[in-house]
Length: 439
Ligand SMILES: [Zn+2]
Image 1 (cartoon, rainbow, N blue to C red):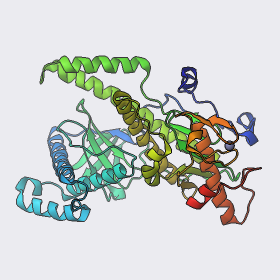
Image 2 (image 1 turned 90 degrees about the vertical axis):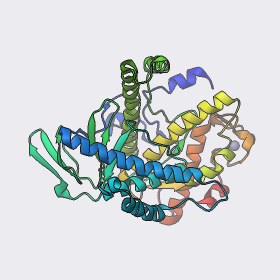
Image 3 (image 1 turned 135 degrees about the vertical axis):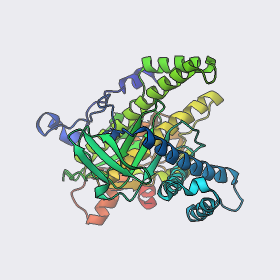
Image 4 (image 1 turned 90 degrees about the horizontal axis):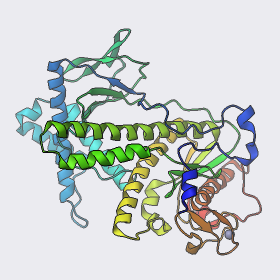
């Protein structure tokens, strides 16, 4: 991987280089993907201000949610391939009922909170099997504490003065939060306590659909290995992470943590500092997902992405998983996990912001097929970032080549569905049989 190249892809992603629309950045409104360190706050999050008594009750909810979650993790840990399947959601709900009958302290808690923890776990497992997230793990006290409230009615959130709102929580009652900006209507919300002991409420609002531009343009996006995402326009996008100085600081803090005595004051401080840095990284990625999904939904009629469920099985066959050495492999695995995480969020947001316009494409062979001549050969994929067609000699960034194949597959479908509209069809090229047949 040439260094200058990755450097070029840095945080300030260049604007779309869509051939047909050249120059429109100046005239036709912003046509720029605004990726970078911008807003660092999750716009749906508000600072919760519980009274001491309420805080104790909230912590109890957290404890129940953690208990139920860990129970589910444990049951799934016992499951091995070939054995009778681990209990599903319905089965675990039954077990929860039994557990509530048996344990007074659990029964005293909110069944909504406990059931939702189970549901969250099952969603986490689905994400794991869909390869968009890492496997859900054991939750420790004081780490990522939180619980979710669902089936929220509009009256469950109210404003009591200019800067103060209240949110209704089962068995706790009305808890105040800082009404620091408009609150979107939400179907669920999540209460969290960060490592620094601050409470937040996050309203899970489904974003409004964004109207299609009506240009008939299709864009393909491939989850890259070398970059976060490659577009068929040639654009390479990188989700921002930590800056170099921040990475160094994180390393320093982690070394300090290893040396700090358990339970010491210093250790607590170091832990909090690490938590803040990691939260910053998460915020930046979320921010990137929001901006990128908004821009794609605004600029293109159809956004084609790989179907993660299918790529789960074919990813290794695509030759994108290289295993040169143990350390490198571990690192690659970690990066992939992080990228996959952001990618899953991006696809979810796209489906919400561009309903019916986000197409999931079977990614099989998209990385091995030449977008110029249609020839398919595993050897054409020279390495993670270069594609060199063994048949016609076409050279391209491997992820961009794949993104173009994804776009063309979607365009092929769209053309068939509309009986041949003005949709951008690749010229002087045979339709790519393999890709078209996969759908
Ligand atoms: Zn070729």
